[in-house]
Image (cartoon, rainbow, N blue to C red; front, side, top):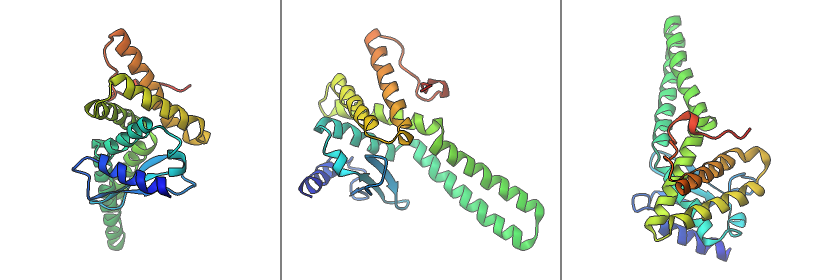
Length: 212
């Protein structure tokens, strides 16, 4: 309990000024796969949920990099796009109900198409490559934030990579894919920097490494 309270206060102070006041740091449910994750309560407030029993096994540097990753995710363009798609889907289903009540079959088909497209895009965001690209891009933002806080880039990348390795080792196999991809991308970026190669383009679907 002492560690949890102290750490929650410390992490609150690491939040960007723009996030303070509407992002809460709370303990995660024990059955949750993720060690740290985010959840939007509504359009104004969000939560960063942390499994503190696991969290306290990490070093300070590892915790900082993982925390800066999720704060980057909170403000990513992908999350804004997801919010728009949810609203479109809600509007589509509301329209569907109205069309059903009026027995307008053409309108029903149109509203089903709108809601279905938005639903498919949400699925792609949560389950597909777009989510993985958002996660790996957030890792780069976390490394940049660490550099701004006085870390060397090598130390920041090494801290984040070692944290991901621990999470992969102690996470059920069904929950590992995102962490494995993030670790692979970090290793590729490290290699590219060492060899002075062009940086990986995280916006391209082909940039996501295969785990096969």
